[in-house]
Image 1: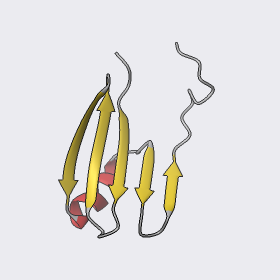
Image 2: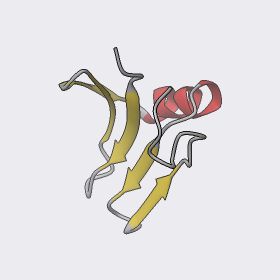
Image 3: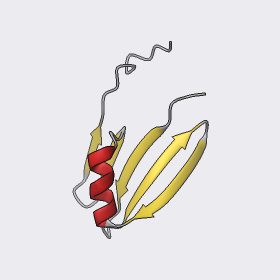
Length: 69
């Protein structure tokens, strides 16, 4: 079983969603701004996408070299 990929997405209307992708299954949840702030405090996202800012922040994991254990 692969580790989940976590993504925080802010769309053009500033609607925020939290994505979890694991074993080819994507789970999406809409969150409020206060909820997103709490998530940012507690979760290290693999990717944060902000369409209004035309910005993507990618967290470099130790396995970024493509090797699996």
